[in-house]
Length: 421
Image 1 (spheres, rainbow, N blue to C red):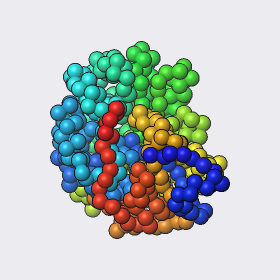
Image 2: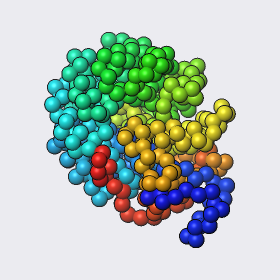
Image 3: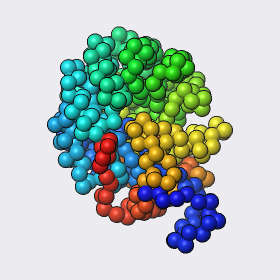
Image 4: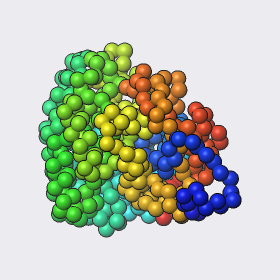
């Protein structure tokens, strides 16, 4: 725990660590990570995800409720997730619960066990264990979520506006992009704003990719509704025009859109319409990405980036100018901590907060090499890119856990359950 914050002139008499011109920031908080364990540990796992997190300056991550088996849609399933994570986390780990059709009676049990909120999909999630919900399901779940004082995280695409993709193989990124039009996001965000207005439940839009939806989000916030949104590094860094045909490592849902859309997302981030940038680290075995065939329509959608969030965002921000380190810290640490109910403890450097720190050099650059990535699988669209912002040292609860490319301690991270550990 941080006992005090001083300007350096007080001379406390303790050990002094001088990091020169490097930046000392609160440890990053990533509230959108698919760890996939138990059940799909061949996709990712708590050990490998934790290694990648630490290497990227992330000291706290929150695991999404799907892609594991069982999916985290009941208190019993949450217990299985906690058991799988116990003793295997290099960083602190929290858990989201899930909303699926008919499980509104299970939400209280998960809340009692400590989840800060719940995640749902408005479109098929891609895995059979986690069904998607419609407006009727949300009408049943949202009053209970409001009663519990939790937040609902939503994959916001309206299935009515998603055309049926062709079954024929297609290497063109444009063919995939056409199957996830921005209108599907825009209509879903409008629905969620209406439900937020009607129920008073706190709603958070995950991985926003359509800049057209910013108007609706800004309107909801201007009304004072408990409505927020995140975006991801890949939507801020890449553009559809730059995605090579057959390069399925770029496939995600919602998709990476065009350059003009990307620049409008940056505007939304700068003006506060978008609250935060999280990774949506969604890995899978290489064979599911169909990289050899390059078939965008049948490849699994998900981008691996847990280790690279800080340098990817900083590189893109620096290229545009006008982004200071305080805003970077807000986007990558403070705002995600607040979403997960960890404000005052995570994502900040104040007395009483956990002593989680990342020390990084904003001027130093590096090339992303697959062999230096700690994710279980190394396929990522950032491979070969030169990024600015090298993570040098990471502290978890005041203990140095990572320095200059290597982990220094065995798994010692805590499992974070709201109201306890």
